[in-house]
Length: 84
Length: 86
Image (cartoon, rainbow over all chains, first blue to last red; front, side, top):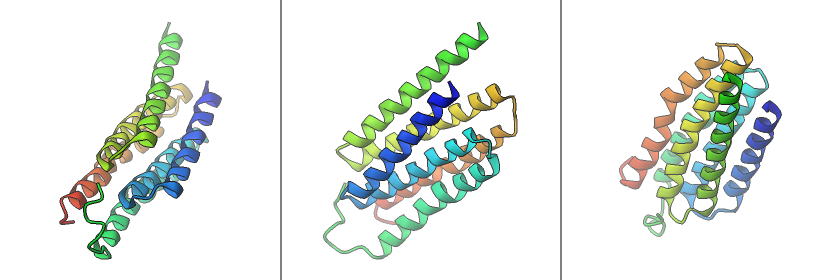
């Protein structure tokens, strides 16, 4: 059962990374990158490394999304304001 | 009996992860993807706690605690960005 969980989480990492490459909307790309960090964090818990998982949860999913959105908001041009 | 309940709950959680990923791939708007991110965060917290119970290591619950404290930041940042005043 634990093997099945790990395989499905790794499939989730691959799907999120492919979405982060192939989507063409900036906020969706940032969300997909954060989701890849989330699945990686749960995979680290599965591999018995809770401290690495805690760091990944704090930095990879929380802080990176915030900083990316702040940077996109700072460098936004007039065309892609209404992109949701 | 308890083993069967744990296996059933793990199966339901994996099914929920699959449904969230389908919504994330098919999602037309950004709002669908934000809701999918929130759903997958909650489901992953439940999965971490069940893994902690199976492996009998209660230090794993701290990871779920940190995740629950930080998970609202991403959704909040996207919401403030869509409100155009981050």
